[in-house]
Length: 546
Image (tube, rainbow, N blue to C red; front, side, top):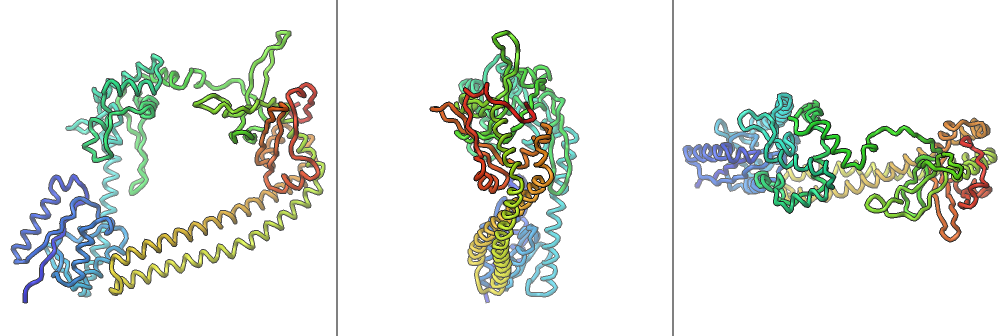
């Protein structure tokens, strides 16, 4: 009877191992062993790829399909970890089932294991667990080693050598790279001279100066390289404070080894010149000084522009009256009112602070005066929320039950593969379909959970408002500015400001924390107020800011 062939499977984890010694050494050793033992063999060379999953290794899939046919004696590998280094032991189960189905063996230079033999199967299981542990140990040591190298001021790769730096080939210490430092110094001088970042990017591109990836990117096997400089890249370079040598580049290690390491780089720019560049980039030195003139705005964070939807913020401007006396004109303006690129020239007119705050104050007073009716409405709303919750809960429980059933189906699917009822391709196909179904169920369950949380949140808001009605609103006229500010931000969700160009008037829509105030309370008093610029002198402010 003719002896069956053996399959030789080779793999390394990284391209560096493939180019240096790992892959060639495996092929040489395994083919020599097969020839010495008189085995006919077929080589399956995976190359440089991680052993984490089977699906990303085409040669591994080919290997499993071939051994299942029963036409091969087994597979020769340099060590069991070449077949899988997955942290999920289910991968090992799939590999062993394929070998059992074809009555094939797993051979290394030191031993031959038969998955159908109880003792050998146990040894393979131990090998899978050890491979998993070994991988975690290796990654932990590698991460710890990287952290230690950074502490010594040495490079761990591109992430530790920003533009302007490189690693010394002998000592691996990070040092200034003269060619890139010259470009950085050029950018600093241009920035101090008043050039914008877009102008600087255009100049570098026109001068034919290569970017880092343009000159070295081919070595990194990344996306196609280009010599086109981008303004965003230049801004990030000029903004980084670690170029001063006084602020570190911080690395956060969070997986396998938890530690924060500060790396201080050689100085490329003096702190004085660095801040000079920042002032030029951001407009003026005043942008970096703490504002000494702080004005209190009662509706801060509540106002929204009815024309563009953006927020409206408070602003103060020094003015001079006809009698040469000074005063501060305070108003709210749309943040989108600026011309491009910061805004879109929104036509919303600015609103005087006292006018709009007076209108909101009057509306709050009208609600406070109907506090008994408001409390009744709050109780009705609470009952509606309870009714909505009772409808959502059964639906959520139904989806959770379906999710549990999907988990059981996955187990049955894996069992069917192990018994040879379905192939590996069919297993992966059905797993993909099942994953999509699970994803849809999880999304629907999450949506219902979010709806239930919203209802519970609104229920809590209603309780809070009810307490305010009972304990606070009757004393609203005695509130200080700070107390009124807190009440506004608890009760009001947002205030939409509209502007009628024909009439030259503003109007507001107040959206309260729960819908019932915006709708039902407004049946007695309208929840908006009209006021025009011509009425400024006649308005009296009755609130705490008066």
